[in-house]
Structures are given as C-alpha cells and as structure tokens.
Image 1 (cartoon, rainbow over the protein chains, first blue to last red):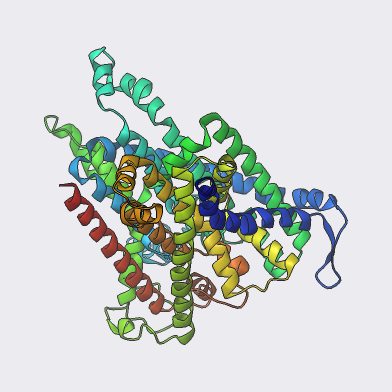
Image 2: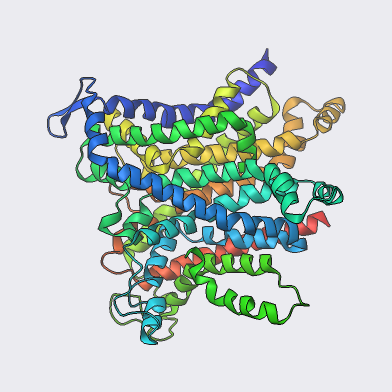
Length: 284
Length: 279
C-alpha cells in the first residue's frame, strides 16, 4: 500500500504548486475575461463575450505584427542557429562543450540588460553608428533603432541559444556513420545532408522553433527598448491594459486570444511529434 | 542583414579565398565565430562601459577609463536594495523549486502512476507558455482572490515557472540510473529510506544541483512575469527597466559585469570538473 502511494506523495508538492499557480490562474483569467465593469465599481461575471470582440478588433494590428515578428525572428534563428549547431556538432572536435558554453554566455547577462546594451550599441551617435558616421560611411541621419528590423534582430539575438541547443543535441547524438553510409552509396554531400542529416535533425528544429517562436511572439521588451512607438507588440498591450489602464476584462481577453493562437500551434506541433520527445530534446 | 556585425570579419576571407585555391577555408568555423561575435557584442559593450568615466547621466559615449564605479558599486541605495531582493528571491526559488521539482522529477522518472500524462502535459505547457500569459494569469488570480502583489507573490510566481525545468532535469537523470544498484542496496539489508539516502540521492545530486542553479538563473533574470506581480517591490531587472528613460548609471554595468563574471566562473568550473570526471 505504501509503495503505491509513494509516487503521489513525491509528485504532490510540485503538482499542487503547478495546479494552484498555473492551472487555476489560467481559469481565473478566462473568468476575468468574461466580466463587465471597471476598476472603481468592481467587476461582475456577466459572460460578456463582447470583450473578445473588442479585444480582437482593437488590437488585431499588434497581434498580427507580433506573429510576424516572432516568425521572422524564428526564421533568422534557424538560418543562423542551424549552421552553427551543425558545425559545432560535426567539426567542434574536443572543444564542443567550450563552443556550447560560448553560445550560452549571453544568458549570464540579464535579459533586460542585454537588450538595453543593444540599444546603446546601436544608438544614433553611439559606438557603432557614430563611428561609421564620423568616417563618412553612413549618412548623418541613418538610424537603426525604432525600426522593425531592430526589433526582429533583437528578438533573434535574445533567443538564438534556444534554437542552437536542441538542434545541437539531436545532431550530436546522431550516429555519424550513417553519413558515411550515404557517401558509400554515392550520395553527394548535398544529398547526404538533405536526405540523411536534415530528416534526423528535424525534431531538434521543431523543438527549437517552439522555444523561439512562442517567447519572441509574446515578448515586449525588445519592441519597447529597440522598436519605439511604431512597433508595439501584443505583450506590451497586455501589460499596459493590466498595470496602467486596469482594464482587466479586456486585458484578460487579449491574453487569452494570444494564448489560444499559440496553443493551437503548439498542440498540433506536439501531437505530430509526441510531447515527451520534444521535452527530452529540450532538457538536453 | 542579420550578420551585419559579422560581415567585416568574414569579408577578407571571402575575398582571399579564390587567390589561394589550395588552402580550404573553413566556412563553418568562420560562420560560427561570426555568430559568437554577434552574441558577444552587447556583452562586450556592457563590460567596457562599466569602466567608462562619464560625467553626466548618460553612459553612451566613451569618455575615458576609470575603476571608480567598482568602488561606488553600491552607492545607489535603491539599486542595491533591488539587487538584494533579486538575490533573495533567487535563492528561495532555488531551494523551493529545487526541492519540490526534484521530488516531482523522481516520481515521473521512477514510477508509473495515474495522472502522469496530465502532469507531463501541464509541465510542458508551463514551460512553453509565454511569460506574458503566465504573468497576466497570475495577476488575474491575485486580483480575483485578493492576494497582495509583492515579495511573496514574486516568489510564488518564480517557483511556479521554474519548477518544471528542475523536474525535467532530474527526471532525465533518474531515467538513466541503474535500478540494480538500489536493488543491491536492498539485498544488503538497507531499508527504503537508507537506500534513498545512501544510493539514490548521491547519484541524483548533480542533476538536483543543476536544476536548482537553473531555477536560480531563471529567477534572477526574469523581468516579464515579475513585472506583473511585483507591486511595489523593485527587483534588479525592474530597476534597470525603470532607469532606461532617465539614464542608466554605470553601477548597473558594474553589477551586470560582476554577475556575468560569477556565472562564467561557475560554468567554467563545471566544464572542467565534468571533463576531469570523464577522463
């Protein structure tokens, strides 16, 4: 009897914490998103679906922009992260772990500080642009900050390691003899890559895509610091509605819409792959 | 465009390549180092400008070398207070999430039980859910139930979003353990608790520590979730955020550099120890 209870007792504290502070809050948020009222009169449950209509119609621009920026950042991460992960896994030799550590180094600097550092590095008269302007390589009114590329590149910068790690984990574990086998069977380098290495590494790319697309889409730090007023993302709207305007029902509704859009993606993704497998790749 | 910063370092190789057909250029290596240069650019900037002898409020242009900010690292009382909050929350998160996450990981890795699939799914969702959603949902709950935002709220939030990471790290290790070792201990007369204490726990310790450190690192770095539930409490990332508009004092660079230094030192020690153990 006692042995049967053991796993439940072990899992209970962690499980209860996740239930109380993750599952229940999500339910609370959905409930809040259907209320009416304001912060002075209080909010009453009226199953007011109108909040969703208002949220979607008012903020569709920011929502679409966030999805596009997230997608752009994810694609950049794949384009940069895959070759880097490939080279470290296949040609890193005995320095593999050192390279991996170097890829992770940015994580030792606070996320906000890293982003703000970019802002100073790229400021109109800062170290990079100021110097290039002084020697005449750039026009005096050239600016990087407050543009869409600045935001997308900032996002890609901050989340690149999340792409490199899962791809590396898969490539590193893969049996390198299968590539030799492909060559023995007269596959060219490109064919061996496209038909052997790439399919094997796809779970890593999927996991990396998940770990990059979700946080970049929902991020607002990069948009606020590097993007200026014209590049507001949906996360920023959520934060302002909650903390500044105290319009909780609308705020909760937008959050739920964002979550729903992302979750539909995740679950169809995870279904195709099996969650355990994606999580294993992540944990590596 | 992406590798805008790498192009200057890569360009000479591209130009030279055709003139020396015999020597092959290791494109992959150049590329990887270009990516690393990109990753390091803002960090280099942060470290360099912790030595910048600025006169005004804005630490943007280079005005000369000084060490004085390291001497005055703790001169901004509210910044120091923010750092202390961050460290206190980080340590408490490490202890709480480290403990309950390890237990959860042990249960998931070792036992089969009802609700296991659901637990895996909830953990997966908690890791994948964007921080804005986690923060907004928690704030919604706190508003509905009337829990005050502040120190305790931040701690509750940080344990919530780090516990799954600890559980996964520990579970991955539990799965690789040889159950025969525990059986051997039992055969030699050890009880369940003694077996756990003397056999299982020591083997899991590296994973538990790794999970705990991960929780600590995630906690001290967190801005988005914290900003929702912090109330009047200001943590280090929140303080930096608040200071962007008025000018960030060099002390922030100093603290960032110190945290970076400690983190890198720990990581190097970890790599060296792991290497020595393997050989």
